[in-house]
Image 1 (spheres, rainbow, N blue to C red):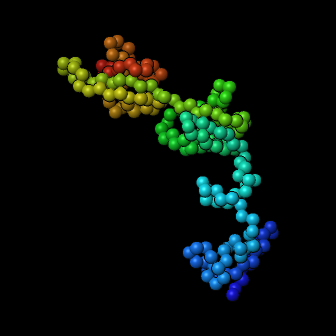
Image 2: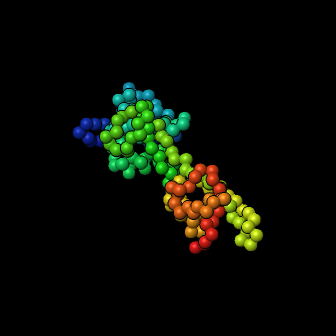
Image 3: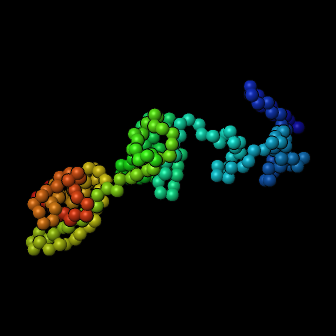
Length: 198
């Protein structure tokens, strides 16, 4: 039977090159791969990752913070740039929109996302946006034809809404105040087109 020899400065393993059956045992001698390799001290099985880890191996590598959002807590590595940390948080919590967010520590301090931030537990806060009501009127008799609720998170969202409606601005219902930026919108207020279209 052929011998396979693995050479590494730190590992030397000699094993028989016998085929394994479906149960992970050698066909000819009914030994497990662990026995053939001389592994007698198997570490605990980690069902979450499907790997064997010792307590030392489970320790986090690099700078890691804990981030909580509702009932979900994730470990986030902060060894990268601010943009990389931000993207890691977006991916970890599946924030698919362009909503802004921030981290707040236990003392209520909002922290910038960088490598120097203290290694502690943070609460994730996500921008709830501004929700408004949009009315579209029949131009002939000024009756409401349709209405919709819109939640906007950024100036880009506001511009996309205006573009979709074919309007240059919004006007607050019951006033002559035109709104041309998301910063001017008020929560739960009704708007319609400003009297001129694009």
